[in-house]
Amino acid sequence: LGKRIIHHESIASTQTIAHDEARNNAPGGTIIIADEQTKGRGRIARNWDSSKGKGIWLSMILRPEIQPHHAPQLTLLTATVLADVLSNYVDINPKIKWPNDILMNNKKMAGILTEMQAEQDQIWYVIIGIGLNVNHSIDDLPEGLRNIATSIKMETSKEWLLKDLIQEILVTFERTYEDYLENGFSEIKQKWEGYGFKIGQEIAIKTLKEEWKAPFLGITDDGALLTKSSSGETIELYSAEIDWFH
Ligand code: BTN
Image (tube, rainbow, N blue to C red; front, side):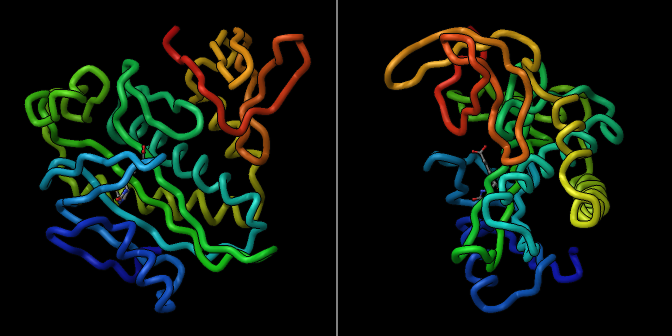
């Protein structure tokens, strides 16, 4: 991992470049990183604010030999890697909000965007995008984000060297990823649940048909959320409107 690092000062999105590189046979482990993104992408077609030198904006190309339906495990793995680096290296206590937002004091510090190209039972490549807010002061955040986002600097009252953090993330990722390929998902799942936001607590769920409250029990091997239906059976949710702060 990281044997080939492609660095750009300013780019639309590292994610887009990573797709181009992957289609051109870039090896698994290639990393695309940018100081600034002008069109950073978030999940569900949202944009991702990625201003110059304020955070870590990178995409990794992976070519794991796993079943396509297990690809969400890589997103959960990446979330535990970020949570580990934030706890062990930065010395703060992050939570992971299902499926993969990193929170500090209920505000978002990092997000992960996983995209893949697969055919039937085979993965061609997976791209994992990481956006981590590092050196933003509150004034550096767009006004609309000030109540819902945070940065490492805002939580620790000091500036951090991006290159040291990148190094920590890549080294921790490599170790965790290799362990996962060898030993499977169960350790990651346990770890994820240890960081899980609202695990064991009540969440409010809203589907097209109904709204109810139920405990958040944990996650499955496919990354689904385990909870109870309104009639009390255990169910798996893959995508749902959850009101985390009800
Ligand atoms: C989310 O929480 O919605 C996911 C955000 C992912 C942002 C990162 S920044 C690097 C990579 N390039 C992008 O355009 N997006 C991801």
